Image (cartoon, rainbow, N blue to C red; front, side, top):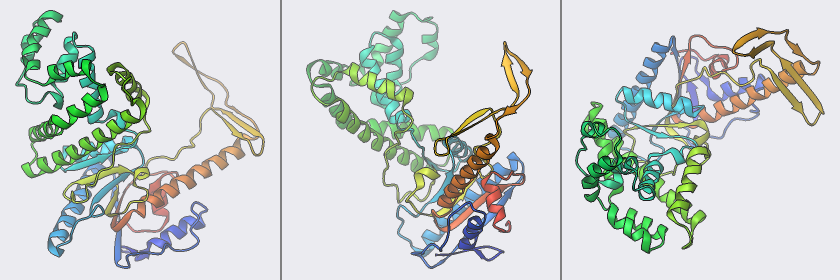
Length: 417
């Protein structure tokens, strides 16, 4: 595809060539396009934080509406590429933009990096296991009754429970009638007679865990004031992700704890450790290609190898790593060590100022490290921009420093919309 940037009529290839001239990107020859239709890139200026948020919401809403109209008008058969996708550099920015869009009632689907063990599916599964291991604890039973594993149990009187002042016996007596409405007792007996993983698999097959989860998601979105169509689309998307994560969880448990010797406590400990420390396992990928009515939010890292109709980059003012700080730099190849001390100290909650210090190798090594960081960030921005098939929108703040994506975009000479 030949990308033309509005107003300046500069091609995207020419933009990448600018970064090559700056020594930030190795771009000796143009990318060979599969689609030779003209695409569109636009830069939108966002000023202060409030205006930036409004620009993000406006740009996403406009692109989503435009895509849906084009699908209906041209009778396009949606695929996994027919999406409006918001890409961010970090999980923090990802959750930030997803929350912003949700607050403005835009249907959102989120895929975060390393979030598998903190996903709703794993959390609910862990809560369910806890109730069987600590069945004498009212808190464990209460938490179980809030999960989709309990199904519809009726409303619990929280005010009445509050007046019990933590009396475990009275709280347990209050919760038992609700627990008896579930399948908890059946599986509690099964766990003592059969292999644990077999019982867990049967529980997921026989119960309507995902259906109840979807119902909870619909109810939550209705309470946020969203339209019924938006509620359904978002809830069903969340349900498909929930099911995919459950399937992946069972595969992981089978791989790590297979055999008749594994018990509930083994699985509980395995999940407890991973929930607390594992931030590398990503959520399961499911085919949501026909869900063009919602916006997909993900990190650039997770988008590698993928393509989408429309890509939006909302936060381009994130500073690259490499600012001045007290640090030690080591170059094993040159057998050099550079160090820098900024001059600030802290002792007994009082700040003291000392003279800054650095050795003779530091300045040269710091410059090299800063350049490497800039090259890496340029490469990541290149990946983000080339995920777009038809439309690319970059929102660039008014103020920026040289070590940001915003500066790199402005250096290409592209005019703002």
